[in-house]
Length: 281
Image (cartoon, rainbow, N blue to C red; front, side, top):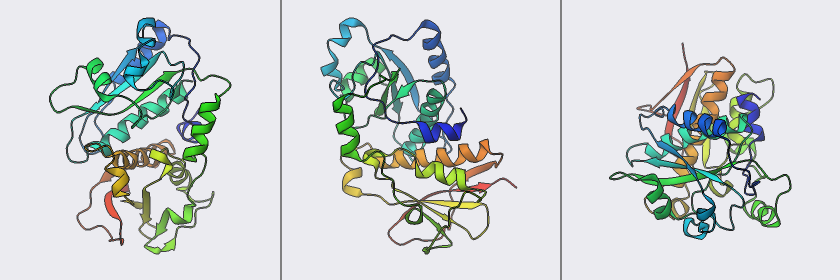
């Protein structure tokens, strides 16, 4: 499975078989987590694999995932120290792990507001100032989704997507980007279009500079929603996810580039500039 195919096929898995990870599977995931590098803005999240014993299975209510996630025998806890662009880096780095797990046949599910942070924090031995913005179960998807999972998918509209012409623009927000499969950047942009986001709100907007291989990322923030978890900016995490989808798929296609923060990006009304992807010269 290519990375682009992983972007298209990954979905939130809430029902898992009760199969425990084998030693080789555990070892492979732990190695993957330890190899994680800092994000494009210099922040480095910390990731830990948490296996649940039979005793802990009976105490899942304390972890806050009981009922929302069923059958998972392991979780990945993700930790970051707040700072400039910390949540964007968190989303960028964690989504890289999500897609690598998808390529290796594992099911995952972004959890940002439906778990008990203090309980997971205890298991992660948090250091000073560290927080746990999100976690994911990791395991093998149950072949038949439960009724609860079907209801949750319907409630958040997980299959619905904003039309490309409302997400991508050329030179100005008045000019929708004509996204066609013949476009050199169709796959990176389409990978952004299908990227996961909290409550499927898709807060990213992208402006291309004419025909140049330069793409500016903007943030259509829902401030009330983004403040629901107090110090955790869940939609900034979404922006990091979108940046990873674009940059990684472009790289896979041989279109190397770098993510920068421009001093004078084109202004877009009511949108907050985040960063720019520029093709390498």
